[in-house]
Amino acid sequence: MLKLSIIIPVYNVEKYLEKCLVSCAQQDCCTDSYEIIVVNDGTKDNSLAIAEDVARRYDNIYITSQLNAGLSEARNKGLSLARGEYVWFVDSDDWIDTNCLTDIMKYLTGIDVLAMGCRFIINGKPSTEYKVSDENAISGKMLLVSGIIRPAQFYVYKRSFLDEHGLRFMPGVYHEDFEFTPRMLYFADNMKVYKGIVYNYLIREGSIMQTVSPKRSFDYVKVVVALSVFTAAHVDKRFKLYFNNLISLALNNSLHNALKMNAVDRKLLSEVFYDSRFLFPALINSSSAKYKIEGHLFSLFPRYCLGIYSVLRLFKKRKNNQQITL
Image (cartoon, rainbow, N blue to C red; front, side, top):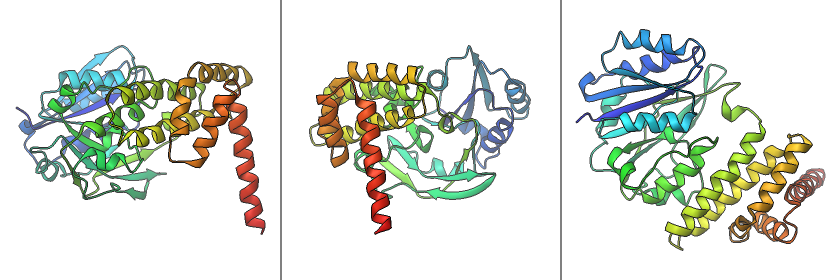
């Protein structure tokens, strides 16, 4: 069995793809120890031709194509084709350091998940480095309590672990990692932390995370509805607080994004919040005073969540300004 499968979803990334693929292919380990699976998610630019050109140079790059279905479905497709004992999702506009895989593979024995940090790239230059919050973590729950949910590409997973727990990405939504990562961490009983920084995370204009759109707000609610169902069915009471905090954070992110939406979309989102009012106890039972206040007010006035959020945000802003003046 191959030791590692690197899964790279591709959609309209012709400016970045070759650098990503070459970085994964130019490694100091045998090509028969790992594979690179490129999932062409119905790309409309020159990305597929670029992938095919690079694949002709390296015999462990494999390309599969599907109609455009989004990042989640592309990752799930790659996972269904993967033959490696472990899998690593790498975004097609990011890259990994040359000759890092041999060292990483030393960790991939007898663990469910390997957690790692990253190097943020802004305007073409390294900006800051993110390191795992607890470098001594030996289980996913130890990272879960930090409340920081990192993208899926900052972990390497044992494939059988993902299969055992039915861990797949929620299709058709933004913020799929916000739903996937907490579930994954909750089940990961055997973890190691890779203390080096080898993943280069490109922050670019036009990416999903840098774009304001109504879909982001609506999808946050979809994601936390699924997370709420998971919490009720699987999460031990000792850890429900941390899931309540995550649900509360996502609801706030949804409302914050909605501030830049038009009146029609804001009204639709208000209806979605009303229909999802069963989530409000998560706010009340969180560890944040702000979330608790929101939860009580949302429960009293469930059709006015966006207005309540706006007023509380304005109140906080004024309070901060007064403190600065004093």
